[in-house]
Image 1 (cartoon, rainbow, N blue to C red):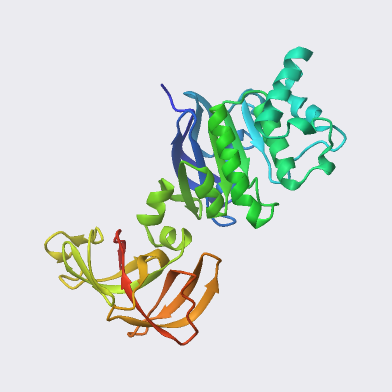
Image 2: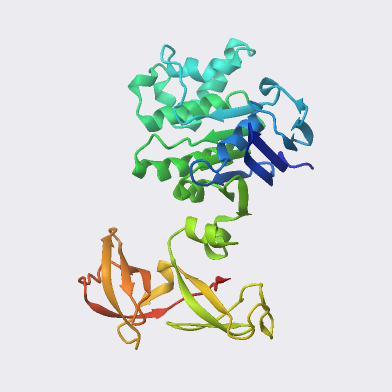
Length: 356
């Protein structure tokens, strides 16, 4: 069985400026993917190429095994059976909610159309608002209407372009989880584009982190956080710092907080030190806030430089004795003052290191 979406070696440029290079990924039936990256990285261009609004200069796009885009070949957007949800909702202000959802169902008989609309409004939690108009709904409710409208014709693929960017920060992740539940319930294959990693983590089964038109890593949210492929992914996903370290042997790296056991960078040959500079190779080790454990009995003492209260915990910036700083996520019952010195130890399960 073919994947719902196959994107292979996609390349594109505007005039003489390349915007995409070698973009490849697949989505299986019912899988939710995400292109995550900063503004200008090319993620929305990928969405436009998949939708058929533009044709790629290189590579191809297949839907259910059928080639829909390639240089010199572009199936029109209306023939692709792709639904789209935009960040500005794009609802018709003069139509009530039921008629907005029914807009793409004009081929159905009235009874079947009404049944489909009713079922979708119930699915998105708006069963009682069929007669309301868009301006009478909150932003989150309008986004649910836009989702219902996109799902109404039964698309084989749903594209979501920064769908939560107009919403309050607190609502974004909540709605992202709700939308994920709806898509899973309907068995819809979907691709989300966003710059917000919290939205990406809440919704997606697989995420492609993009930078300068290239997918740096296509992986699960867990692996992106704990096993980033390069410095860009390590810096863009989550929070953390890179501490200097020295390779001892094929399984051990020494940093200021102790000796870590785990994989050394690929450039450090197993058992023989670093291919470039021999045993004692200098590396940088990724340390996340949740890798630092508050422990008053620890011999390692760090000074509180900054702190940010987050309700259940504080995010502390701590200066180590050697002058480097780390971030630490510590239970909010431990309210330490700026300048106070506290005991810490390392609780790091995944060693991520990069050769300097």
